[in-house]
Image 1: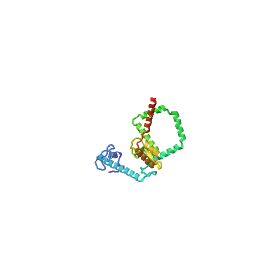
Image 2: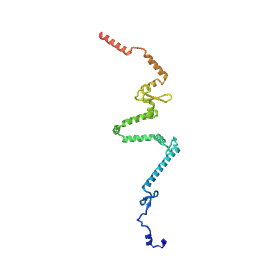
Image 3: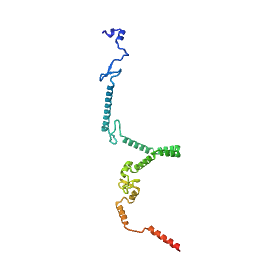
Image 4: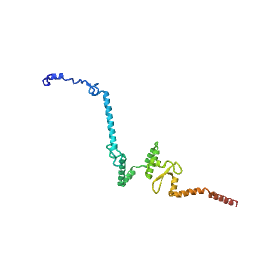
Length: 250
């Protein structure tokens, strides 16, 4: 075959393949016929895609395992994900502390801004109507009541509503009443003891949480039941009747 340099342009054009004609292609994995501009048949492409997805899942699982075993939150020591500096709880606690510090440093200025905005924009009637429309929605009133109770419990006792329900057991520890309960606590140690109804909790407070006084009170009540006395109210009533009868007769 002559050298390309010795061939004429016409001969080179005749020997070169037609640009519009695609060469015959076969799958690089199984050797099956494939279309133009394709390297694999549909079956081999699906197998390759499955292998790629499995490899990606394995990589992500290894990343999670490494993140859970090797990366720890510097604040609480709990496991954190890769590329995270702190866990969500520590981030929220840090933001809360930052907000409180900012409030303490700028308390007067922020309050003045609130007062200025209230004087210029606050409309009591409009706000009352807005609140009424919001509370009239289904489930909103119950949710607000639950949130207010949870906030009150958190403020007074420092526990959540679920922890409060677990400590009180849902009934009064003395009478078994399942109504509204309060969390009874020791005034000396400041530790919670359980849930009581308001009457019995107040009664323990009047007795000063003294078991000896409570035992004396129980003994007194048990012994007083052994005496039969005439109620004073009946004596006063009978004396009043006798006095009226005597005056009427005179």
